[in-house]
Image (cartoon, rainbow, N blue to C red):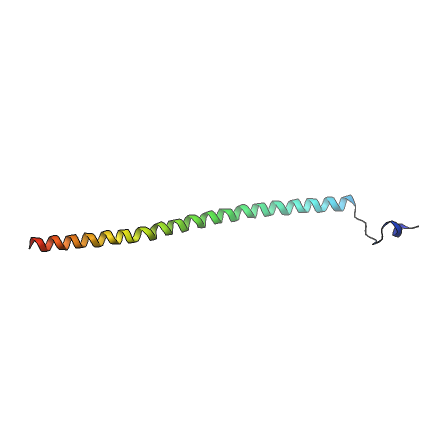
Length: 82
């Protein structure tokens, strides 16, 4: 009886191959973790920028309304004094 009887597919995987794959997997996981941290940082930056734009967008109509009311009051006051 030869090795073929114990390994029907003729494949033998040793502890060294398993260890090498585990080390490679660990390295890939660390890389993915670092990339994930970078993506989270970019996402937070984009979120801050969007929030800033939203504040500016909602503040603009209030500023415009205040300016229009101020102009109307000035016109009314100037016509009332004449």
